[in-house]
Length: 235
Picture 1 (tube, rainbow, N blue to C red):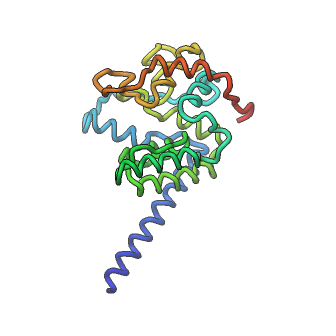
Picture 2 (picture 1 turned 135 degrees about the vertical axis):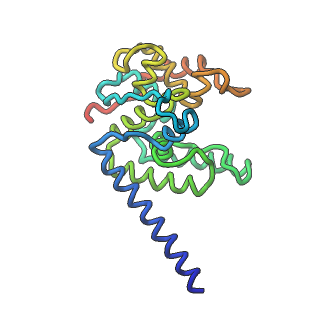
């Protein structure tokens, strides 16, 4: 039927237009810092709705002003071979697929790299389904193609959630240690990195579930493995 073809064409052009929007946004972020992310906007709405005053904490910190210990700790926690892969870790995704098949139609584990996490945080929702995962992979490819690894890590560290209403490493170091990301200790760096899998639980016990992460044990693991992560010398 003609109306069906028209509807399909509209959907196709809409999908193409959405990808072009992602390309333009990512291209701008090679030179400009994102003002907010999809996750930040969703959290602001959850906490504040239409209120003009909102307890969202965020402060951008440049890559050079973040200690190398903190960078290494975050990489150990989230993606220890970040500088060696092209945005995805095939083995981890295969393991995630196998676990998800056992879990039925609902995605239960993503096997995401830092680039994939950033793609989700910048543009997408926390909903877990295969359509969203496919779009995440497209955005991941664009990020890896258009931005340097250091820039991807810089944006990630400045946008990831670190507690209720706390986004980015500048706000996190200030909130937890009244410090800045340049001069926190190795122990503090490992503690902050240990929070990333469950930042709201790290911040407030009311968000913790049964079987929650042992942050102290995770911090110790990160401390023991930080020195094996090698950072590039030049940006």
